[in-house]
Image (cartoon, rainbow, N blue to C red; front, side, top):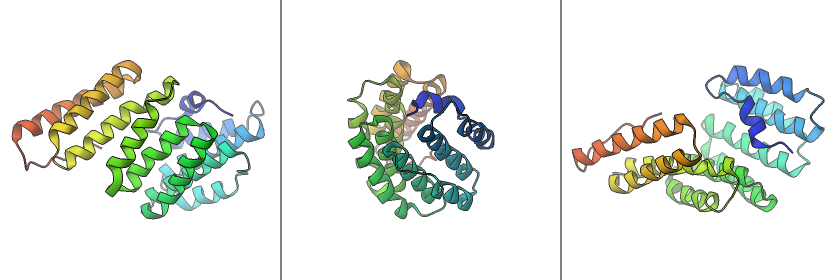
Length: 216
C-alpha cells in the first residue's frame, strides 16, 4: 500500500481542483498496483468533495473496490468527510468510528489518528474527548509523519478549550502545539502555533467572558 508521503506530494489543499487532476493521473499510472490505484481514487473523491461536488464524489467512492482493508478504511474516511462537509455530521460519526477501529486493527496508525481527529470535528459535543484519544494514540507511534498529527491535535484542542472560555488550559495546548511544530511540523504549522499563542494571551489579558472568533 502507499506511504502517506506519496499522497502528501500530490495534495495541495488550497487547490483541490489541481489535486484532483494529479490524483486522477496517478490513479491511472501502471506503476501502481490495483489496490494502490484504489487508494489514489479515494483521494480523487476527497478532492472532488472539497470542491462541493458531493454527489459526484459519492458515486466515485461507490465505484471503488474496497475489498483490500486499507482501501476500505480510506473509503470510510472519505465517505465520512463527504457527509460532514455536506451538513450531515451525525451520519458521519459511525463511519469515522468504523474507520478508527479498522485502522487500529490493521496498525494503520496515520489513518487511525485521522479518523479520531475527524470524530472530534463531526461530534463537537465530545470534541475534547475524541481529541484527547487521538493525542494519546499519536503519542505512542514512531512514524514521524504520523507524529506530526500532534501539532494539529494540540492546536485543535486548544481552540476547543478557547471557545469554552478555558483560556489558561488552551494556552497550554497551543504551547504544546508550538513545541511539536518545532520538532516535526511544517513552517506553516509553526506560524499558526505562534499566532494561536498570541491570540490566547490576548484573551487571557482581556479577562473572562471575552469571546474570540476562531481562526479558520
